Each structure stands twice: as C-alpha cells, then as structure tokens.
Image 1 (cartoon, rainbow over the protein chains, first blue to last red):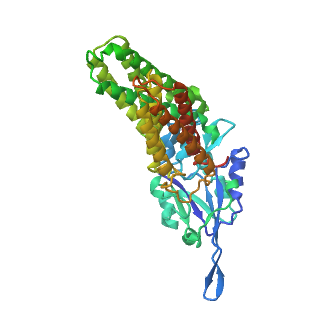
Image 2 (tube, rainbow over the protein chains, first blue to last red):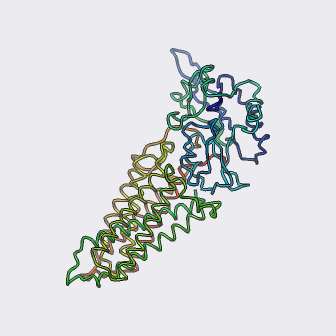
Image 3 (cartoon, rainbow over the protein chains, first blue to last red):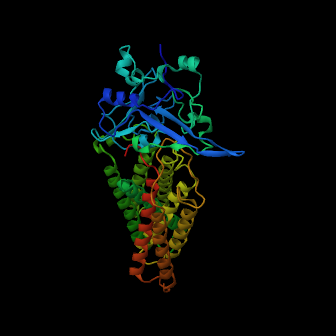
Length: 205
Length: 279
C-alpha cells in the first residue's frame, strides 16, 4: 500500500516543452492564468576568460514543478480553517467548500504550488489527479511528457529507483517542508548559483 | 501591493490598539492613586483610552473581512489553533478585545483600583500575545523575505509609536508628546536600518521560486520622509508646550497624520515584497 505518493522529475531530460503544464490545464479545465504545474526556465552565466580564450559558461535547464504533497505540508499547518488536508496515501488536497480565501497558504508554500482561483474565490493546486490514481491510472502530466521526464509512485520506491535528491537551484531547502519529490539534476544545476542563474520566464509561471 | 489595503489597515489598527493599551495601562499602573491623583481624575481618561482601543480593534476586524473572499466561513477561523499562526492571531485578538472591554467595564463601575490593574495586566498580556502572533505569522521559515529582524522591529515600532501618538491624541492634554517623540524616533531609526527589503541592514533573500520583488525604493523614501516630517512637527509641538501641557493641537494633528501616512506607505511596501505568482 502506498504511504506517500511522490513525483520524480528528471531535469536532465526535460526539454521545457510544457506538455505537462498543458495536459494538467486540459484535464482540470483550468482558467487562463491558473497553473497547477509550472515549467521554470532557469538560465544564467555568460562567457569567461580562460588563458587567452573566451569560453561559454552558460547554464540553462528547466524545472517542472507542481505540488510536492509534502510530508510536512506547511500549507495545511497554516490554514486557519483546516481546508487543506493530507490523505493516508500522502496526497494533499484543498477543500474549496471550506476555504475562506485568505491566501495564507499561498504565502506559506515555498514551491508556490497554491494558486488563487478567481472563479471560485478560493485557492487551488495540483491534486495528483487523485481520481485517476484511485482508478489505477496516472497523473496527466506524467502521461503527457514526451521525454519521460516525469514519473510518480510511492516515495520510498522512487528513492530506491532514482536516488534521494530533492533540491536543485533555486528550489528551497527540503528540510522546510519535506517534499515528496525526487529529482535527477541537470548537470548545470550545480553551477547555477555561482553563475548568477535566475528564472527567465516569470511571466509564464 | 495596494490590493493588500485590508491587511495594511488590519495590522496598523491592531498594532496601534496594542500600543495604545500597553502605554495606557503602564501609565495607570505606574502612577500611584493618591489624594492628589484620585481614581476619579483618571477615570475619564481611562474610559476614553480603552474606548479608543476597542474602536481600533473593531476597525481592524472590519478591515480583515475585506481581505477574505468568503467571510461567512470565517466562523471556523479558530479551528486550527494547534498549528496555524493565523488562527492564534485571531484568538488573541478576541481575547485582548474581551479583556479590554472587561477592564473598561470595571473602570466605568468604579471597581477597586487593584482589580482594575489586575485585569489590565491580563489584557496587556493578551495584547502582547496578539502582537507576537501577528509578527510570527510573517516569520514562517518558508518566508525568508519577511523572516528577519526587521519584521518584529517594524511591528513593535509601529505599535509603540502609533500607540503613543494615539495616547497623546486621546489624553486631553499633550502630556504624552515626549513619549510619542521618543517612540516615533525609535521606529524611524529601526525601519531605516532593518525594514525588510529596504533597510540598510536588511537581508536580501536568496533566489527562489517566488518572483522577485518590484516595489519602488522611491516609495520607501517617501514613507520615511513623511514620517520624519511628522516627527519634526511633533518636536516643534514639544518645544511649544506650556507648563499646563497645552500647545498647538492643529500642528499635532498634522504631525500625527503624516506619521500615520508614512507608516502606511511603508506597510504597503512590506506586503509588496511578496509578489504572488500568476498575477
């Protein structure tokens, strides 16, 4: 029995096509501007001189991020009306009938997973396609990825299969919320901070 | 950031209420009741001050409803006191308001001085807890932009400075102007040095998945300038007071308005530091 559902994301394989983002919007019928899964384009660096030669020191990679259904969900801990709860299988979801729209959870989440839905005046987020999961299916984003950069499953199984890295630049310290997430880093991620990389597509996320 | 006006109103009104009450209660507790200063002489002042606290808390509560998208569901806002700092803030707000109302009722009923002081101490503790929980709400480990010394410094500074200005305004005579000058100066200095995002010694957060802040540094300067100008006027009022603590009330009113405006501008900037994704 699954005790904690988690996502695996292979940053080395992600091409930034955003098929995952579109599949999520399509499946959940999200309004324009409302994103449950976002693809961040991280880039930085430039040229550096080595001896007499100038060599490129560009870093560029993508991060596909939805809700990480954290083991310590700060959103749920912060919600004053307990509108955010965690199932036995680890999926964290929002009860929109209880939400008062204070948006404190939106502030609290370091992964910006919670998004305000103007149609319902409540917050909403990735729900791991729990109805598809319960019926034996897969999340829409995982199914849509042409690069097979996304996977899902029990967190312990994913760690055995892919390792236990949960953080690359500029994700927050995983100790804050214990995200149910496994990442295979892109080779540029290790040098991103020192080369002044930043998210280049804020308007899209 | 101007869309956060309900939160600006809520925090400034709530902090002013706490500062006003703490300074009132401290003054009352420290001044011994004697034949020269009988309880009857202080009764009117206490009732006015406590009434002012309740009006501010009511204004804060009203403003908070404009922040909620479903205020009718807010009756369940105390459900998560165990882990939610927001729930605790509302709990201590209600406790503070109830205890202040109780103290006010005791004063109105001519209760014994020691009983009034006892309830004022309890109300003061509730007010301090309200201010503490309000500060803690912004100091989550996942909110590095606000999780720094500047947040409590600015919140406590606002509480004491605006509370002292309100105490002066409600005190009848301008006897509390020196206190107001002191606390406004300290708040200005604290903000100039430590205000999140803008203070000279403020820590800049590391890159994250939150969009970078974009509020105007010029607005911070305008806010500081407004409050500094208000402080200058307040000092002018101080030096023009006579022995009966009477002075230019109109000038005091203008200085109070400038101090409040300056802090309101900087409070808008405080909320502007956390740019929400997808907007």
